[in-house]
Image (cartoon, rainbow, N blue to C red; front, side, top):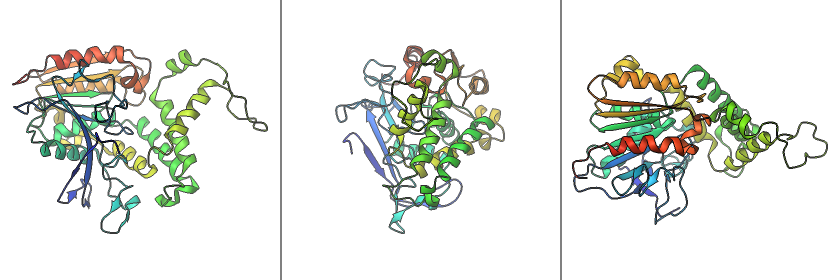
Length: 370
C-alpha cells in the first residue's frame, strides 16, 4: 500500500441509506497541499466508478494519479492555494469498506451480504473524512461522472457543507439508456459461470464477464466520432489466431481487448456490481420531491457545471438541467458546454478544454485567508 494513502476508521456503526449498517468502516483517502489556519481552503474530490483515491502524485507516492494534469502546484486545482482531499468511494476495493472487505461479524468477505449501496452513502463517507480533519465548510466539492452525482448528494445532505460545487459530466439521475447499459454490464458479470453467485475466489474471478462488461463500458465512455477519427478501419497489427474466423481484425477491437485485459484483476467484480447499481438508484428528486426543488435548496454560493456534447451516458441536456436548476438569481452559476470528441471520458483526456474552465472558476473562489 502506498504511503500516501490514509485510512479513517470509524468507531461507530455506519447506517446505510437503504437499510443495514456497516461495522468498523474504513474510508481511504489522500491529501495534497496544506490546510489553512482558518480551515477554509479545502476541496473535496469524489471519483468516478473505478478510480482509487490516488488522483495525483505526491512526495509520498510519486506514481501519476488518475487526474494528474488537474491537481498540483500551478495546476487548475492548485495545491499551493488549496488543501485537496480525494476519497475512495465506499464500496470500492481500493481501501474503503466494500463487498470485498471482511465482515467483522463473520470473519468472511461481505460479498453479496453487503447492504445496498447508494450514492448518498458514498457522500456521507466522504463527509466523515472531512469532519475528521476538523473542516466545517469546504471551499468546494468536486466530482466527475459518479463523482458528480456524489457532489449533488453531498450538497443535498449537507446544505452548509460547501461554498461551491463543480459537477462534471454528471446528472441528477440516470437516463433509461444509461441504466440499460449498466444493467447489461452487470448481467455479463453475473452470467459468467465463475461468478458463483458472488462467491468466487480471489484467484478465480469471473474474468470473461468482467472483460465483456469493461469492453461495453469503454464503448460508451467514448464517442463514435472519436472512434472514426482515431481508428477508422485500420487493421490490427497482430495476426489472428489460426482456426479463429471471428478473431480480432481491426485496431479498435485490439484497443478494447487490451483495455479490458488491463482492467481485469484491478477491480473486484462484486464492487463493480454494487457501485454500478448505486448510479442507477440515485435520484436527486428524493431530496425535495423534484430535481428542481432539490437544486433550489442548495446553499452553495457558486457552481460550475461542465458537460460534453458527445457524452452518451450523461447527455449535455442533463448538464443544462443542473445549471438551470441552480440558477436562482442569487448564486453564480457557470455552465461550460464543451465540444470534446472523447465523450464521457473527456474529463480524463481533453485537458486543453477542461483545464482553463476549472482554473478560471477556482481562481475566482474567494478565501477568508488566502
